[in-house]
Length: 376
Figure 1 (cartoon, rainbow, N blue to C red):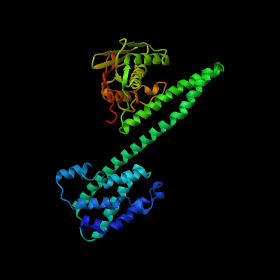
Figure 2: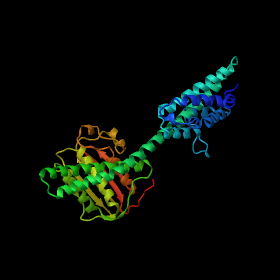
Figure 3: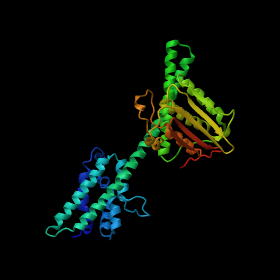
Figure 4: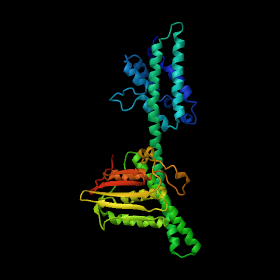
């Protein structure tokens, strides 16, 4: 008997073995009924049987072996993809997902070969079945990983949002303690709380911004008429206060008005300057230079120090990337500063570039009239 015919005829026997194995995948399977344990196994096997019965070109065979079989235009998800998403939502891990397919492959082939008895199995069917199984595994792993990442980003986003309120309470209490003049010891501790709270707030803001981008929402901006020179002057003053041992030089016109999200560009500048402070030469200043014309503005953040290796430049703006010396430096960062800086520039319709030789120079170019690009 051909394998496709066997799968259709003995579907219930195959599903019984699938269920018997799935129930052992604890702890997720402990609370699942038979219907949930058999989730999408029938349409998955039906799709494999249909595939086995369909003529296949050598090119199609090659694509399937690489997990690249074409997907039907009217089917947003295959059975394997939907199965993977539901397994991820039910608490299975990726090893358990793969184990289901490993057990299914073994049970189908064993049942079929036992059924053939004296008849020699069609080896082409075995090859085609393994190709279909590998395609299903590839689809499942991709969908499972995407669902896990989506769930993780939602969780981190909610965690970051929920932590804002208690952090604001801590900061407000610390500010109150500094005002009541309760003694030098209390004031010193309160100042330490305020500084630590500010660092935590920056981390939470970065985390929330990162999760927005991972969920496809992009960086949210609210453009308004602002003076970029004044905004950058305020930000550099704050950075000098936070880093009193470093020299930060701002070169800017008296006024530079345009339509931008002022707080977001302040955040962008802060990220670039903090990066320059972290990795630049300690005995040399960090330079911030702003220029502009009627249609565009451009600002640079420059620092002296060791050049960035050319191989690292293409990945410098990737999220969760930190410089090779980051682990030896005091302070806390998630490796999101440059990624968020790039996203803020992109949300304004601008760009950010970097070169590194005798100096490391980050250059941001922005249109004078930014238009919010919230869904990218």
